[in-house]
Structure formats: structure tokens, C-alpha cells
Length: 265
Image (cartoon, rainbow, N blue to C red; front, side):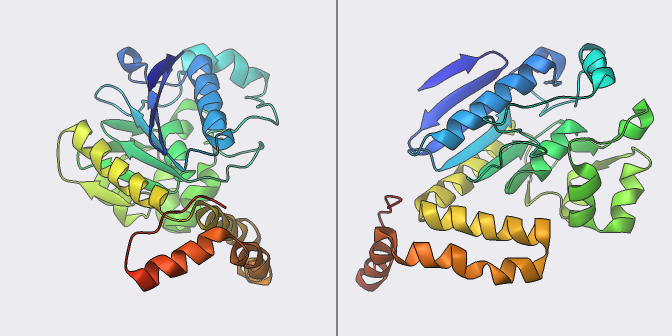
């Protein structure tokens, strides 16, 4: 099932949910409509128990040229954006937390808000020819989608500041070295990059969904509150899992040497 939702396409493939940025004529620059539509798509994914992994990609040659500052300037001047508490903020700031995994496939330009979108994801696949840039300082603003935190957490202070304070562009290999992305695909075809992202998403979707969500939650606690806090709360994530049917299925599948059929129960 594939359909268009404003500036975002949506497609269900089994337990995968494909979300496509679809403003190719504007290099998929984020205007208020695309931000709204992406938030709604991610919220739909979060609320559908049959969907186990989402893949965000972009139609056209470029992932995104970043924010459409011409259209968004009035909102930026008025105080950025507010997301309803019932919706998922694609950038994961000041909103309902995301609990299910997201894979991102990038190509062409991946600028500003695009980098911050992928930094809030769990796995990022990049075409080898992708160009990245966090250039807000060159526009008189700062990266308000989370890069001042996540870029620094991923790359370390000195390496992050090298790009955050200059706005210089960098390539996919540098992004990989900075720990901003997971994997580089050596191809000039966006379809191949998306295919690789879908393969990884399918692998995630085949795992026990409750265990996937618990793993994400524990890791998020470590990032947000520190290692000691996450260690102290590990049992809270583990204990509910031990009572699920999926644990029994996982053990039986291992003993019988067959693929497990997890139901999220």
C-alpha cells in the first residue's frame, strides 16, 4: 500500500513503513507543510502495532537541502515550532518520545535539518557521494534540531565543533569517521542505498519487537541520563520481557534451529 500525504509519501511493506520526503523540485527542503506531514507519518508508525521498523528516504537526487528558510522565517522569528504532545517530533526535541526503530537512507545533499533528522534515527545508510553540512552559523542561527547535542555526542567535542562552528561541508567518509552514519554504500544510485536500508530494516523487523523497543529505551536512558542511571534501570526493561511469549518462542527457535516467529506478545 502506497499513498501520498502532503509532502510525504507513505508505503506499508509487511511490517516496514516507508516514509519518503517528496518535495524533490525544491531539493526536499523542509517547509512547514513537510515538517507537519513527516510528524504525522512518524506518529502513524508509532501508533500502529503491526509496523516494526520505519525507513525514511527521499524522492529525487537529494535527501534534503535543509530548512526552507524563506518560508519558515516568520515561524523562526516567532519562536520555532511546537508539536502537539500526541505527535512525534521528527527531531526528537520537546515532544512525545519515539519508542520504535527508524532507519534513514541519505543521498545527494543532507544539510542542516537533514543531519539532525538522521542523528535522531537509529541506523543511517549513506550513498558514497552524499554531501553533508551543518551550516546554521552561516545563516545567523544555531542547529535547533538537536545537533548541538547529538553531533557532539557522536563525534566528540573538537571534531563536532570543527563543522558546527564553520558550517563547512564534508563527505560521506568523513561522516562515517565522525560516527554520524552507520554505513557508506559505494554507488551513485539512490535506489541501491534505499535497498540496503530496507534490508537492515527488515532484519530489525524480524527481531522480537518488544525486545527491540526495550533495547532502544535502555540505550536512550544511557544517552539522556548517563550510564549509572541506565544500569540501575536495566532490570525494569528485562523483567517484563521474561514474561512474554516471544521469549519462549526465541528459545524454542534456537533449540529447533529455525527462524523465530515473534508476535510482540
